[in-house]
Image 1 (tube, one colour):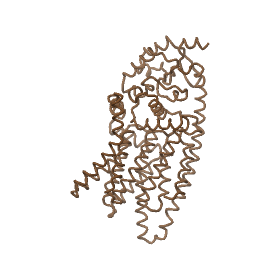
Image 2 (spheres, rainbow, N blue to C red):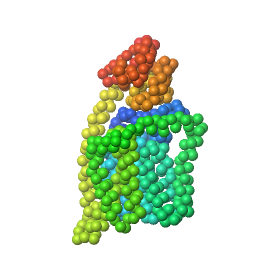
Image 3 (cartoon, rainbow, N blue to C red):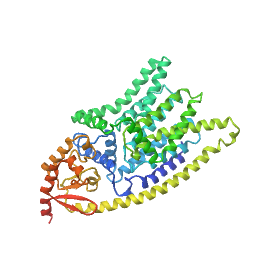
Image 4 (cartoon, rainbow, N blue to C red):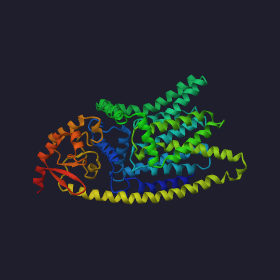
Length: 492
């Protein structure tokens, strides 16, 4: 890849990141739920709080390690830097992969990949954003094996194993490319009676798996957190994604309609059809088709319609489009339109750049709206600061943990956010009641309206009684919060 393309891609990523992700210095701090959870978990690791045991979340440990690394770089812009680096690495590997197949037009595919990320990034610092980087890396080495037939390079197999394990420990539904690759290899190795070669390849994959898995197991064993990890990562996630197949399919169809993803699905289907009828691309046929189908299934696995779920399809869609363009150019070479073959990729790049500029203007509008909302909420939180000292603790009822970040208060309560996990584990309500009764945090921020009937059912009337007996209610039009009465007396 030419240096000028690397620089152009990096500048595009930095520019779009400034207006698209909430870790950008222009946003003045994180104001979304899940990104805040990951930051709190990462910061907690650096303060010797044990993942899953001292602080609860149901994502994999890798996302917290990434956020801990970001905090080590800089509490203020470390996350912004980390996100840019991850997106950039993923983009470079998408370029490298498409260059194996297209030779020309790889820059176009890289731009399409960036469009698929930033159109659906939903504020950033989400599991999908980091997972697709490792998917993109694996995709390159898998294509080196399947397309370039470089099966004897140990490094490729080890990297495939390591990236699989990393993604499994980000979120277990981000493994479509490894499932497709595994099935493809298993079928062809058995068909060609290459069992010894298969065992050798699997052994290298397990080396990659061990490189990532062993440190995670040591950490969990050392901190006696295996049971907590299983409860959070497997049991809670199974409860969270539990739904009928019909509901999952319905939610997925609604999601692609709501967020305008139909065109990419159509192109991917066309690519599969073209590849299937291409006599030269034999082993690739099965992999491409499986990769696409499994990616759709795993994207639809959680019965939700969150826009950021679509990010995980970016590596798959770009690979499908790469093969589609490759086959179109091959067809043109055999026809009378051969003379346009060299011009087509360049024209498509120009079109893509124009679309990117249009997309950027939309993101600028979104940035201005979201930044203004954030400023309003931060101003409202400044009022809370007058009641708390450095050693005081706060509790957020509900699911808006960014209050901890803005107020610079690392939570000590394990379930520092309760929604929606309290709906799947009623013991959390009892733990919350006990924490408020025993510890009496100086500030309780109410994001669910505890006087609402549904909230009373989830949290229990006892919690309301404890708050009413010990706290004074405050409202400033944006935030409802309760201040410990002794603290009110002292502050006055």
